[in-house]
Image (cartoon, rainbow, N blue to C red):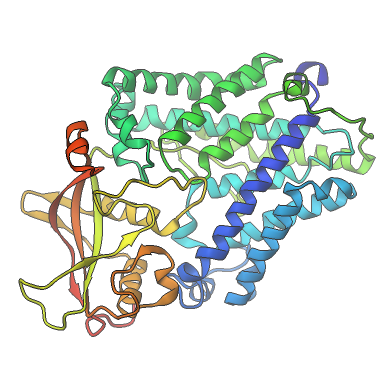
Length: 485
């Protein structure tokens, strides 16, 4: 098969190093965010969650026992093992060691995701698990690079791109009439510094960009299984498209991981332009070759439902058919919101409320708040609280008389409660606490409509956003109002 697909030693090298970097980043995020979000005193505590599930339903180390110390141990173990893979230490050991380390990384992150609840319910989490599991069977650098895991990862890239393209065409008229990018840069979860500039491109550029996206995501993926150099051209187009998405917004490591998968479309003869010499490699051990065929058979068996999903009129997006998150369905932005709404939290230390009460805003690390604040660049890092704050307005109905709020998420009310308590762990999740060690007496949440400023408005005011108050999302509450939630 090498005559058709080419040798993949350099492909393996680049893929494993890049994937290790993303795993390192993911475990750093665990260490920084998991405990305030889901720890023993978190917004959605894991100890309460694991009482409602079994290991068979959601395999996780924490189904047996949870403590904040244990999650720190998991996070630091993930950091150390990811760093070891990143700097190439695994290439100095036997084949079984490389397999064991990558499978341990996969299981540790699986343990996190399966108890992560809403804060880990993102498609790129399953992508990390699927990529990490099959990376385990690529072997260290001193053995001949096997083609089977590379082809399985190409199949993953195919499903990621085609799934994203088809979900767009099936779910939102603006993707079909080429107008989605009129809104998307403004309404995407977490804009970055260049999103404002992309938003103000001519509409003809937006329409062409959507058309190019359809071409890349619906047509190009079929070239991944063509002989070289066709597969490499397909991979290059997919990578180029993902780089455009990277510079226009913050999507955690979704696009970066897709770029890493795009490397599998190349061959050593094409990557030789990098000037990296390929050393002589030893033949794979027989037991390793047998294991690869077993893995290939398992991947084929697990692929039937995801493959059928691509052709279904009721296509699922970001869905796992098994609790191990292997061979999943993927897709993003099947629908695009036309208007951006934001929930802004404010507090006051005044004990009595009246029309002269001074309210002070809390600022999140990335989500829009202060209109004059430039949207930050943070991807591939993932701010989970900011993302869930973006989802909250989706359940609100805006009418001529204001906003109709059907109810409040438990995690949101617990977050408000912790702000009222001046909880140190919760405050690490945001950028600015206006009270600096003092407890606010009341907190409220306002519901705004946000738009990017025009070019003239930005020149005159320096602001990135304009906003219009719609209504209160949450009326003023104090600790006395909030029972245990």
